[in-house]
Length: 235
Image: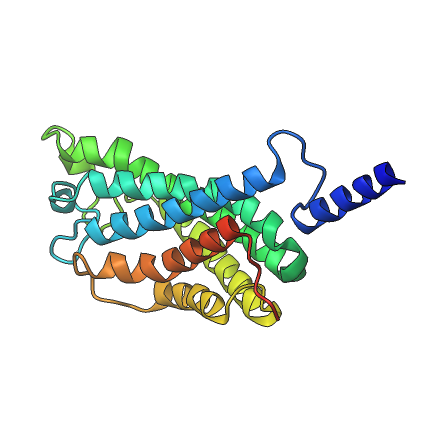
């Protein structure tokens, strides 16, 4: 009887803090690791966006790629995006019981959008545009229209991926608000982050990047902290 009670109690405890039958590493360990990844990713993305150089209203010109913040701002954004992608699956597993189908679609779209747009964009910026801009023999290749490469395919990659990412943010934010899975302000910030990308802000160094990255970055940091503390919002 004692043995049976122990098994029942253990199963009850695990059901309160696991989305599935994890063995090694345990779900609590994965929850903390992915939560920490979200916190670190949010911080580094905000820092990278704020430090990203902008010269004469352009963030990806030859002059901007020679700016004081390059390449460290791009490196911070790349590291932050990688940490975000590592943290999102754990975030979904933690939120899954509370955000429904719309939340699932939102997280997937946000993941894919970041993978396609942010990762692709930053890879080109760091490993192609930056070295090309610093070589007089190849600097002319950098497009003057602030798109770096200036090809239709690259523009489509950024546009389509960006739209998928924004749609994901919108669905996720709306689901967080509707289901009260986290404190209301986190869902609102997620939606604000989506809307912020659509607002035609003047390109100003230290301002534009912060405005674009801060709302969603703070929301991600907050969710990561909640995951570390394992506290879902009580409705």
